Amino acid sequence: MLTALLIAMLTGITIWWLLVQRLKVKPWLEQGVVSGSQDSLTSSAPKVGLWVFLAMVTSLFLVFIGAYIMRKDHGHGGGMHAWMPVDEPSVLWLNTALLVLASVAMQHARGRITANDIVAARRSFAAAGVLTLLFLAGQVSAWMSLSASGLYTVETPAYSFFILLTAVHGLHLVGGLVVLGRAARRMWRADTSNAVVVSRLATSVQLCTTYWHFLLLVWLGLFWLLMST
Image 1 (tube, helix red, strand yellow):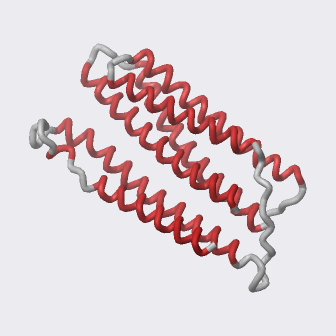
Image 2 (cartoon, rainbow, N blue to C red):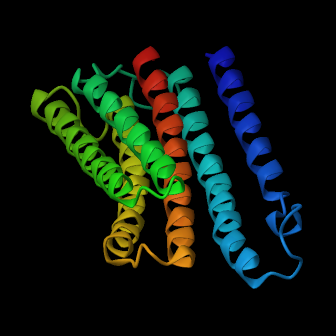
Image 3 (cartoon, one colour):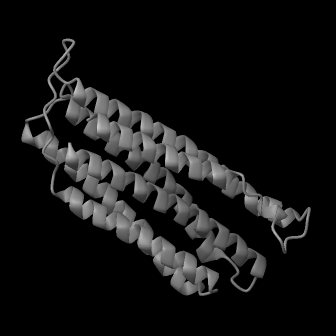
């Protein structure tokens, strides 16, 4: 599995490098933006904060993935419990499809609010939230299915890693749903005739969309890792 570990590390380094490059972008210096514009500085701050956070989350998952691969490769030595592969529940395929649809809905909401179609943006935004909740419910169902099988305990390394990886990913989605809920509340109560308000809503939707796309990529990586090992 040395090759798999190397691929994971190279992928992580590539993602980290892209995030760092993103952090170097200074929107307030782009052509067409008035230097010193308070609105530009205010709108760019959350974007920079998000990319910093995504860089940290990437590092966290890289540590977990590296630990997973190394533990699997040394699953029978040093007095450690033997590595017994987990038979991943088939519901994970459905869960993956739900998260893909949630990401697509989020992207559609972003496009609609950019086109000043607030009504359609609201519907897509709500759909993304519902699909994400269904994904999380599906993950809980997967945990319950494995637990009910009686084949695994917390001392089973592969099972423990499965719970750890999916739970940490799920917690990040829960945090995203909190932010999404706040943005949705503003979207439903906002004065859509006010261009400044709509612009701020568009920024919120853009940030949520970026976050959802990122967590989808993370999940696809985790899903591949779990299914292939």
